[in-house]
Amino acid sequence: MAAVLIVDDEENIRKLVEAYLTAEGYTVHSAADGVQGLAAFRRYHPDLVILDIMLPGMDGLDVLQQIRRESDAYVLLLTSRSEETDRVIGLTVGADDYVTKPFSPRELMARVKAILKRGRSTPAEGERMLQFAHIRIDRQRHEVWRDDELIDLTALEFKLLKTLASYPGMVFSREQLLEQVWGYDFYGEDRVVDVHIGHIRQKLESDPANPQFIVTVRGVGYKFADQLV
Image 1 (cartoon, rainbow, N blue to C red):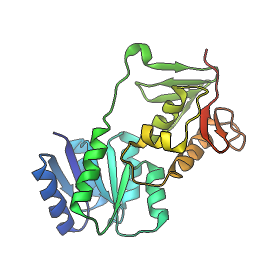
Image 2: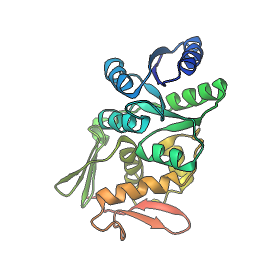
Image 3: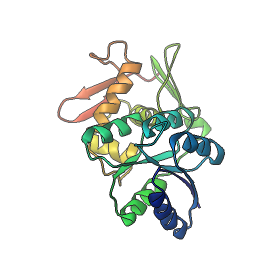
Image 4: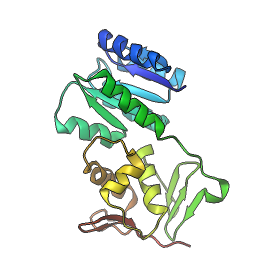
């Protein structure tokens, strides 16, 4: 069964969530602040982190950014605020989903199960590399190169680019990208796709305002436009 790390400074929430997770058979670890949470993450290597945004010392978004530098483990954000900016910032940094406090424990468990069902696949050796005229994607090493330059993408940005590049020239709607990258059970807003596409363009394109690799098809979605070699 999967391992889950709960990082929240409210003891009653940690105990409540831990009780539900334990009842479902998950291995559970917990931490009361961001520094302890990051240390526990590095020690236990959980499959999923339930992470509060508002933490003492090191806040949840900082913890999330560090996790994304080290791992593609799933992250479910908890926030006591309902503003759209919190949700979008968290998803932009690389969270897989979010729940706003106060929340229903049953809803939280449903989100946890949905996230963990997505799975992490390892490509076969013959499918490892995607080679294009300017872009090279190593699906096993999670590396992206533009010509001779290594491009630093987050785990979620990599997955989004890989999805588009796996079908060059094919137009994906926002809804299709949400299903492929975030999963069928994603509860957020579809414009999070635009946010991540924007970040990838900033890193990948020579002129992000006039992209040549990730092209917008107006009124439909996005496609990957580099040529196969």
